[in-house]
Length: 426
Image 1 (cartoon, rainbow, N blue to C red):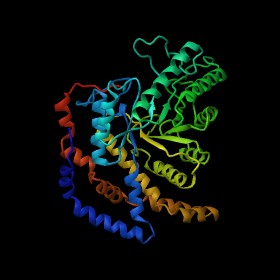
Image 2: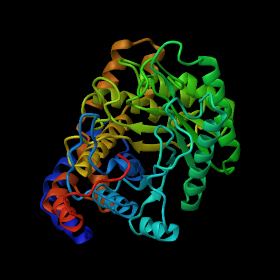
Image 3: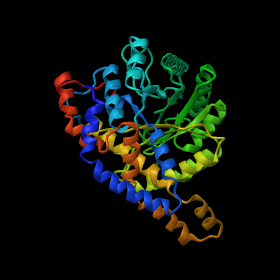
Image 4: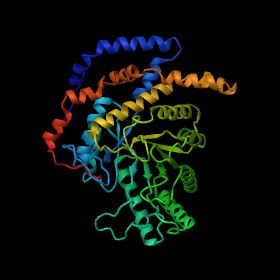
């Protein structure tokens, strides 16, 4: 399905008058506080978030999975779906592939299709958390950390192959999420497992092209429940430092124990120049992978406060790679991704409104009350007109969800692909 520019313009026209009055009022209010509204809108328009190839179909739990119909059954269809999201939001300008699910048969054709949809290739992701068909060695007891040298070599070779695939597509980074761990005390020797992991990562790192980055993800539990080898940001940072200057920590919002101060982690990593990637989602209990901002919107705002500060004050940190990492058990996956993109843009916009100079002065004076007031003044601002204006200026929809439904996107996908297609990688 294609969404024509004229279709969006016609839909936008119905709400343009209301948007203009709301935007003008907000612009006047913010200008009175010396906010450069044009600069905020430019930053919102430039902000792009990668969509992972595995997030375009129905998610599920170990108890079941319920299809939505019209799911993308090929890499080509996944790119087309992201193209639809990007057309509506103008914020989803990249795709993150998961190998071996997304190996192109024709690299030139895939690159041409991505370019047609104005999609770039973000980080490529390896998969050593499950066995694949005809795989010689098993990852049942770990991959890069396994006691078996043969298993470790197989996992290393897979990661190197992922880099080769990404390099052909124009990607510049590899994300390693390691599921390795133990479910029972005494099952693993912690030191041996960590040492094997470090050596394996170094082998992968040294084989990467000189302009590539490695992102090392961490997670405190699951699929193993006694220990995971890379259980926290400190372990990830240590492993990254052990690899070299182009290896970084990746923060996933769902990969923390309850009440962890994620914004502090983000701040410290950026200070050290070691925050490389960021995965957006939300959670109530653990790695729930639900719609961004649906549970803890203020926490997301506080995290963005540190991200904005770091982007402005930590030149030693590289340009960040942004990605949504979610699972859609009840919603239309494309609608869920659109909602996540909107929540990300709103949190970013609110963080951009913080009077950083006033906040620094209040912090220096230990004026705790004023610090809270400055943050909450920005958070309580309805920034939706700013986000809408950024979309409008770049050719997107004022209301992407409403446009998605008015245009009958899901029905069109079902008509084209059928009700029983199942997206790969889930």
